[in-house]
Image 1 (cartoon, rainbow, N blue to C red):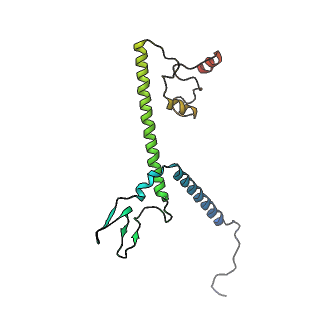
Image 2: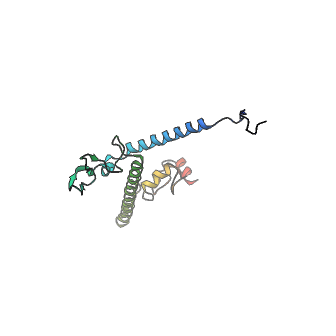
Image 3: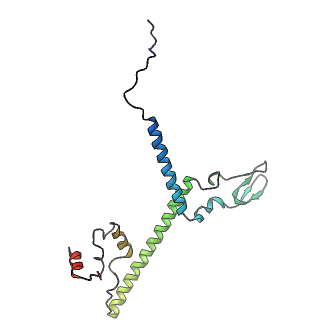
Length: 183
């Protein structure tokens, strides 16, 4: 009678999920990497030039300048600046995501500027219409093009309003259109 534990193993009734979990993680990582590469293809290349065209740096020990921000080491070999991408010269995931956010912010600022310009132009057209007494019925002076575009995808202040029922002209061509817009 030994006090050592038995070496007989009892099979578990619970199936192992280790292989499935690893497969799911690998698939998830693959999907994320695919989306990051898709972002890379959508971002203009000039957004990544800062990573590769760093200002010329100086090797302070030897007082030598090297192009592209690489510094000559004492062995005379050029070393790449930290954070300049992957070994194959492409931007890394962090750089891609950072530049994607910057690019989206730039695009959003451009959209906002265009919307402000459009609102100013609409107000100017309304003002001129009042001054001249000419009625403007062929263009929508009540809503911006952004509001109309958002309504088409079900978002914004016009969400749920039937298409063609917003704006001053309302472009109702028949009594059925009029009834649809009045509901």
